[in-house]
Image (cartoon, rainbow, N blue to C red; front, top):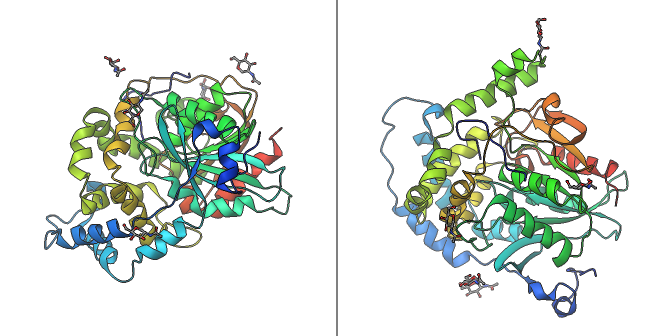
Length: 416
Ligand SMILES: *[C@@H]1O[C@H](CO)[C@@H](O)[C@H](O)[C@H]1NC(C)=O
Ligand SMILES: *[C@@H]1O[C@H](CO)[C@@H](O)[C@H](O)[C@H]1NC(C)=O
Ligand SMILES: *[C@@H]1O[C@H](CO)[C@@H](O)[C@H](O)[C@H]1NC(C)=O
Ligand SMILES: *[C@@H]1O[C@H](CO)[C@@H](O)[C@H](O)[C@H]1NC(C)=O
Ligand SMILES: *[C@@H]1O[C@H](CO)[C@@H](O)[C@H](O)[C@H]1NC(C)=O
């Protein structure tokens, strides 16, 4: 996600043990939500994807000798395309990985909400919801789900819920005028009424931080801690930083300059998706190599330049699986609509959230936005501000050990 022109802000605005048998689910208090286990089976569709990829032609050579500042580079795309159809890329293995966590669907306000749900063995574990954005997916949190359910040396563990935003992966597309605040409401319903978690923590990135901020601000008796790596209102420009005499460390300077550069030259996709979602949505709907060029370029630009080397799990394989999911679930079109549906609610300035719940923030060095501590203090009840020198816009993939630590940190402040 990213902000259009002027700075923006959002107008801020029983227990069901899913680990047990399905039979028990239907008798639980959440039965009106029709919770069902969900099984991923995209193998036959993947063979069609492979055929489409094989039939797609790319230019013999790059038209001009330019770098990634002009978008996806032909040699990078060609290498990814070859890997996708080679024996190195094993969809069965990827699908097995996706299925290593438990998936469910529930019907909330007439929307089929897909979510991953893994419980800790500790009944006193803290419930946490992890919120993705675009072009992220539930998939970006896969590396942190199981570790968070395990008990850390500090005695902390989590019951982890990772929903797909309506219109993404296996969640059904929302009605035309659906906004971030609507998604915040149904995700709060998911945690409290469907799953019976009266009080919970949340983590959000990208659009997930907008959804999470809305939940933090609105459902202030159920959201009792929040961790963000991105915010719905933009951080200060370099000029504002200078004006306000905010001193930056060397790492912060790198991030601030990167954020400024991103605002100035990476907003084309945002404007397109906010104004003509059907153009790009239909153009790429059934074009896997097209989605790879478009989404792959963003993922590469928005992540740590060292992506794919430890501790990053954002390898070419992970990128191909992310892109495969967009194509195989036929949701590229519905995913880009989130920009059009929320373009108007993005205004200027920001307010302090109406909650006493603690907020934690982590600035990843290679993220696409920069928010100094002074800034974060103005939008929430900031209790911890962290900086990480490895990782970018998708820390669940780009630096999972750090994100696990960040989320575990919330336990210090969470009051059930
Ligand atoms: C997956 O779907 C295919 C048809 O698309 C079917 O033949 C196969 O049995 C399914 N596998 C599982 C594990 O459900
Ligand atoms: C519920 O969604 C279905 C499509 O998924 C639609 O046909 C139906 O009209 C919707 N019902 C309500 C009450 O919005
Ligand atoms: C959606 O919003 C637009 C503009 O606010 C309005 O004209 C339209 O009637 C709304 N449509 C629905 C289905 O609510
Ligand atoms: C920043 O520092 C300059 C020079 O020391 C001073 O004139 C100015 O008032 C300061 N601005 C703020 C917002 O503190
Ligand atoms: C929640 O928000 C309401 C309305 O803004 C406010 O009156 C109340 O004190 C808040 N509660 C908590 C626990 O922060």
